[in-house]
Length: 430
Image (cartoon, rainbow, N blue to C red):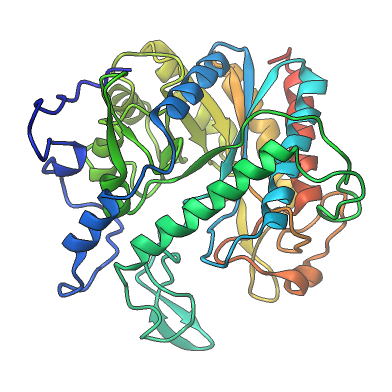
């Protein structure tokens, strides 16, 4: 579990940790006001108990090592951007039920163990292409997620507020507590309302832990929640089990990559169509210098029309450099379009096409497809078009509740999961 990071000096009152290393200016800065008391808020955040434990983080790394070796599959699902709306036991039960149903579906088809990871308990921030956006004909600062500002389209609400870092911690802690309770209870029983009619509302046998994950975007939140693990002799990010770096912040010399290189968690990195073989090998060398299974997951988000042309060369380059990574497919982010209503949406036909292209591309590059990464919800939303649920583009506004990007509803998510499992079977297994 060693990461090459120097341990704290015994007996010192304030041991060095990854959050104190000078590093380059971070991309996608939140833009905190200078007088907002950020240093004191970081100090208070650093004094809070860890949200997840180093032992749990190590457990996920072991499970992901099995995925990298072909002994499992990752199904990662959850919100595009969580909000600070108060989570409820019913919400958590539906989330756990959907994860377990998806896991059961894959395990039945493939005969391998599923690692269920949620985009949950920390997915409170979002990178944005532009610092401003137009809402009802008015330009306002972009909504950066509840960890940074509020979604109401006015200047005051969109002002970055560092106290939200503490609010995010409290919301994550409550969500984790509810998830653990829902997991211990086995999820909802027969007859429970867990989604649309086509989503099976049935008792599900106790399944794997729903590990948490989020994009490690706001370093002022992540750095104070880093803890020293004496047993593992490494620094561990205790805000989540599985942090990832996004397409906009994956620069090899950037602050986000350098920070994740210094923690012992399993980490992920989004891989878009602009990535080159040279860049991905350098990136893997920074995030996975010891070439250990379970350390690094590369999450391809290419778009259906580009995955076949770009991904095989990247897979081949990583394999040639000796990195035993897990390759995951994100078929959502490269396939975002605008509906006639103006809402962002995704078409299930494009999502499924990218899944097919991903499996073929990874095989072509000599790799092993390791899992699926979806923006989804157990709610009966109409944010994405098509699939067996038959949602029409004209219906997209009917139940459009996302805080940022469109999500698959439960039925669409299960359809994508089943399609991925079948694609693996059809391409000669896991």
